[in-house]
Image 1 (cartoon, helix red, strand yellow):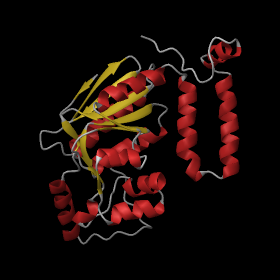
Image 2 (image 1 turned 180 degrees about the horizontal axis):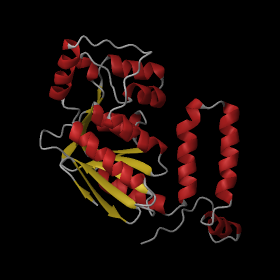
Image 3 (image 1 turned 90 degrees about the vertical axis):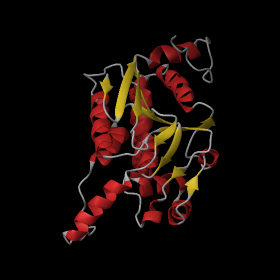
Image 4 (image 1 turned 45 degrees about the horizontal axis):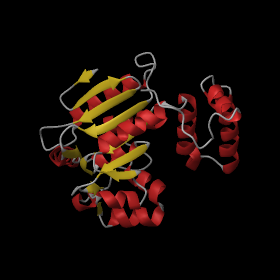
Length: 276
């Protein structure tokens, strides 16, 4: 579907495999941001990819998901801003860049995004993984995390917000203020990843196949309810859940699945049959 200088994408039915790469040590740069945003926008367009269900993000090259954002580029930008006397205040928000728009697409899309962390992922690379709905990490001697404090910086692509939401305030502060670097097993122990496996991509592909066996509407609604829950009151969240539950009940794909259980052909614990 797409072949760029930093990103490529292959479609297989309802699953898209998006691979990130950069001959320059696997670093993220502006070209990565622009190409990834282009690919994600195409995948999220139901007219372009009507059968779309799952997007897997992974690194093309062995041992590297995305190393981190290119610090040389950041340094040049910092020097340019400082030389112009730039000042920043919270009442004048900085506009979104490409990576922020990528994460917006991931969050609001009905598609399910899985990060298959096949190697090192720090800084912006780790933030991209945290933006995904599910994370699978590959076992190995890989560094993962948000050590921006070692540069005198903080995570700038959603990392502080994601860690606070996923770990809680105290644990997030500890990780960020100590510039903690995780190992793969640690991600699972902290529930930042679903599994630590020998082959992250193969595991993600099996998970994608499992997701395709259940109705898309229910998956999209679950994603919306869980992602938006922190911003809703309990009353609003429960009302939204009731409403979307009923919307799932009238889904043509759900009716035969309910009938199978109602008529004793399988139990609620049995997963629907996966297409070959």
